[in-house]
Length: 217
Image (cartoon, rainbow, N blue to C red; front, side, top):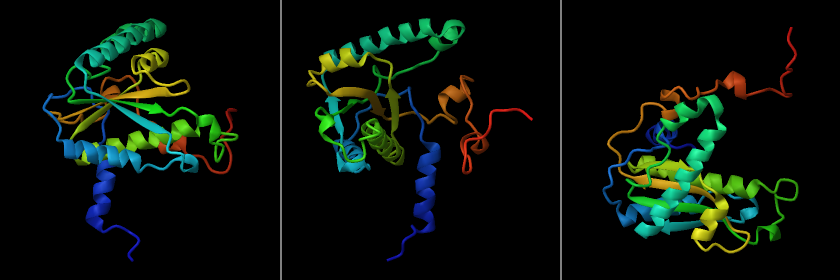
């Protein structure tokens, strides 16, 4: 069996990686249930430490509940702005979520009872969170391949959102995902376009053998 994908398939994978965007603007048109199922299936096929599969997904179909989630995000947005000091005004001009417009809203959460899973987590317990991040990334890339946008919202109090969703003790929400059709994808990440931050180079992020010295000269 040929191990490498053919050229067209390989290019499609890299295209999805490079064109994926954290979207905030949506059209509101409904997403096909079959497509949504494919996105969820992509998430469920993510790698996870010790094959613990710690992700749990809550689909938000109640308009009232979605509004309460948006209220929670807005409260945290204002608190975050106040914590940013001199960058407050710049932050407040950013669109940080698309909960009002998106077709689908999902809450990605960590399961309860995670303390029983030791394989791969004895010294790195946060690997359960890393596993959920892999599931989100799988869904993000699948959404781009399907011609959909997806946005990751992390501005919320996890205790408040857990209570809103009646999560059991030990479970924890880690992301609100907005999914839907978009008019266009951003040419570059929105925060890069808004000059909030710039993409780091490989020289800044990739080291060989040891961490580079911080000493000058």
